[in-house]
Image (cartoon, rainbow, N blue to C red):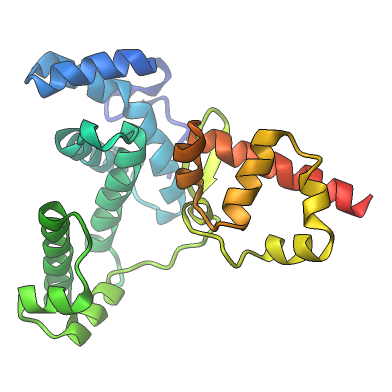
Amino acid sequence: MALYKVEICGVNTAKLPLLKAEEKEALFKRVMEGDKEARELYIKGNLRLVLSIIQRFSGSNENVDDLFQIGCIGLMKAIDNFDVTQNVKFSTYAVPMIIGEIRRYLRDNNSIRVSRSLRDIAYKAIYAKEEYIKANDREPSLSELSEILNISPEEITYALDAIQHPLSLYEPVYSEGGDTLYIMDQVSDKKNREESWVEELSLRAAMNRLPERENRIINLRYFEGKTQMEVAEEIQISQAQVSRLEKSALKNMKNYLIS
């Protein structure tokens, strides 16, 4: 898949607008009021997000134009369903929506075919789960899904497993300002390998040499097991900044401990 193309689906990617946070906020207020022109501008202002996400699917051998179009569908769904009252950045909400749309497309076009009946069960379960979350503000248990769909838990589990693709924890999810976020950055890290070696090598002594903010990030990540997103919300910076500061702190601690 050629990601170096300047023009994708007739869009000159070299000239995509880069909106400031306040511009996006003002535009979205107009979008919520039904302003169609503002919606188009908001979509164009977030196309760079779609471009950054489709790069993670470079090994799929799919046409980049097709993936870009599917990603744009996911972006528009994210815009239509985004709830500003949740106090979450739009990009944080939109990234999994766009990824999900692309993965559904790839599943439907996978050369290793899953039976239609299994796929139907899996999609019913996915849609039922989404509706349940909207109505109850939590994910349903497997038994609850089974009751809603009148399908056995075993069949639901088998169907969902059949349409999944294995992912590496080191697959990039999103890149912002040169800082790449990986799947592992979205996962709680209570039993991280780094925690093992730092505990054995006087972790606290190394942590005390860190600036206050980096010390706090390491404590939240490796002692309280929080994800980077949770840390970002707690100390009021972006997840990309948390990623950068965490990597820098671990490097400095390691250098101190082995010196």
